[in-house]
Amino acid sequence: MAWKWPWAWRPGGKGIALERKQAGGHGFVALHAQGEALWTRRDYASLAREGFMRNPVAHRAVRMIAEAAAAVPWLAYEGEAELDAHPLLDLLDRPNPRQAGASFMEVLYGHLILSGNAYLELVEAAGGSRELHLLRPDRVTVVADDHGWPVALEHRLGAAKRRVPLEEEGRGLHLTLFHPLDDHYGFAPLAAALQALDIHNAAARWNKALLDNSARPSGALVYAPKEGANLSDEQFDRLKSELEEGYSGAARAGRPLLLEGGLDWKAMSLSPRDMDFMEARNGAARDIALALGVPPMLLGIPGDNTYANYQEANRAFYRLTVLPLVGRVAKELGGFLGARFGDGIRLWFDADAVEGLAAEREALWRRLGAADFLTDDEKRQAVGYAPREAG
Image (cartoon, rainbow, N blue to C red; front, side, top):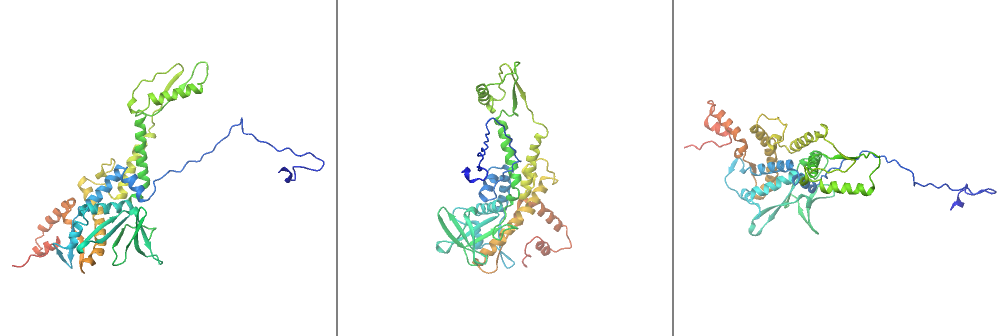
């Protein structure tokens, strides 16, 4: 193809020889920029796997919230009157044959924390009875109409798909947490601590790798013979394999190293700057607890003195995290189920039965008992009880 180039051949002249370049025998320089960190994905499966299933701080925090919220008892009201028994309370006490009320609510709160979404389906069983079932968030997609309003939930299980309507008389309920950038899906609290979660998990893997290498930092094996020769490739490979097979691993910790002539072992210790990873790990644990709304003191994280004592931290946990979440779910469930059990039925929770707030109740009763200017009926009303019946 050289004849196509104007300088390849000239009349009365010789063709210009093409330049040939060969890389053999020459060195090269490779420039590398700092690589970007790899973060866990924000989908439900990744957060559940890396957070709840592999991280002890996130696992304990999620369980504390879910179990504490699921233990709060429900109350049903018709107008202002509290109902001692009602089919709505029976349904929440036993939502389906597989789950009791506490187990069902624990899964619901866990879905909300790990994905920002919880999906319920109301099933009309035989004999006019009703059942509540939870749908796993990673199997559900919100279906919107032409105007962008959600109208159904599409549940996928393998190749099978089915739709659960969301209309006013529909069988589905979609619970969400606030998401500033999405109209249909909620934002998972654990996703806000994603970077801290990865740092904490990476520190745990680093510790495991350190234990696998005799629980001490690596060193340098220096070969410095008097005649200035170098190790051959065969000697280098043999020496490397002997070190890896005979002196690495926790089971071989402390084994003496036998060196031949010209070999010297230089141990490499960690500097104070390298040891900062422990503080970074504790800081990441505090960030995870902060994102989930659990006082670090309750999780045993060192270096946190936000609350004066454990009791104060526990009270803040219930007031700032558990009860707002339970109240949110009570409003949604009451609106979804209340209309199906009769007009005027309102669902709420019994904060007086929460053991973590017993100190607050005792202080309130003590103050009311000392208030001589109040009548007995006014004191009963202040703590949420109806007046005594006359006679």
